[in-house]
Image 1 (cartoon, rainbow, N blue to C red):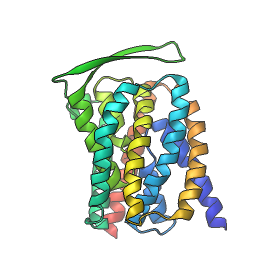
Image 2: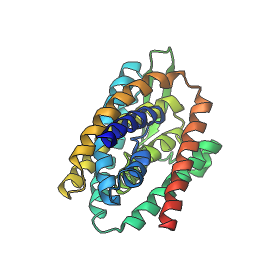
Image 3: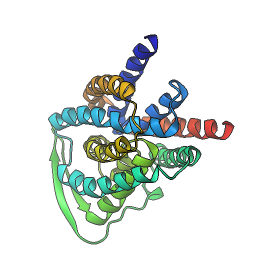
Image 4: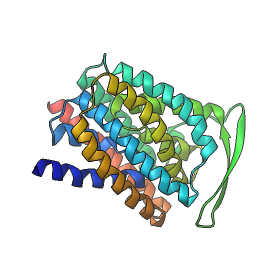
Length: 267
């Protein structure tokens, strides 16, 4: 019984952190499931994605009220992201746990460097071809207008879906940096990513459900705790300075990526 109370507390913390960073929380949940609760890598990934559906929904509701979601951009990303999530979920049936862990750590470490350094050139913004203009007015009197390129949104959206399903997270580890390097302010990138994650994680979790990679008990505990934590985190996020938020995102990504890589190598 104590184990389940501990799981609930951890879930609240993960939901809190995930909503602030604009990610699903899989980069924390997958290690927690494998290291603390002894789930195998594939079950940890599947259960994590299922929980992310709940946490990202919670964050999306809160960020929607703040007016910080670029809805049209999110829609463009969601479609290829959902396709990528399905393909990524299917691929987990053919990849070993070690390969999945190394893919996860490699992706997280790379994008951690993007956020820590603030160097947008590490990922090339694909500002070619057709685009649309979208403006976002939030509750904090900010009016942000952007030129959104379909090529950039579609390709990075597909990549986020694949990596998210393969690594057991919602794809925010790619969504946030890719929106950031396109020029979107970090708080809006976090909010828009959270919205995108709800739909892509739903697609990926559906595949893992069919593959039998979801543990019902841990799903219920982490979904309930994560939903509550995400409400708290999304309300606190606007008060964090943009520069600090970027650094926090990068450092957390880096710590988790290195930890997973070390654990995999040491067996």
